[in-house]
Image (cartoon, rainbow, N blue to C red):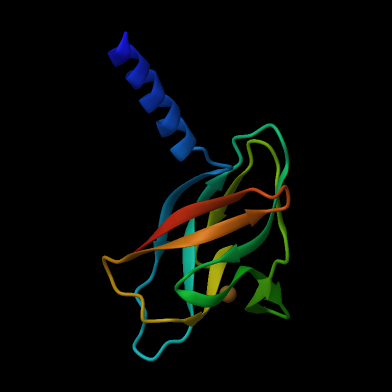
Amino acid sequence: MRVLFSCILLLLTTSIAYAEVVNFSDGWARESIPGAANGAAYGTLINTSKDTLTLERVSSSVAKSVEIHTHVMDEGMMSMRQVKTLQISPNEQVTFEPGSYHFMLFGLSSLLQSGQSFDLQLHFSNGETQQISIRVK
Ligand SMILES: [Cu+2]
């Protein structure tokens, strides 16, 4: 009985630890070029909930600030534009990839080196936050 009870307890704590707002996978960033102050992170985000989610803010311990950016065609030139808030509908997938959405990292505390990982904190308008992991390639 006691064994069964501790198993249930373990299951409960495990599911709490893995509670997530969105499903995020394949988080990656490019290695920094020496002297670079900024960087970008990519990955795939899926809203697996039944509600529309609004990503309001992103932060990281490796950068002074993080912005959500996308690329737009502006007078025949590709340029980056900040996206203040990102709405994600139920079952919608948003792919952060070069030339499209990316997490722009401003003021890196140190150069991103291949093999290293760092975290981003996603802050949603419903007050929930989620930590995602980014691997430097
Ligand atoms: Cu950017």
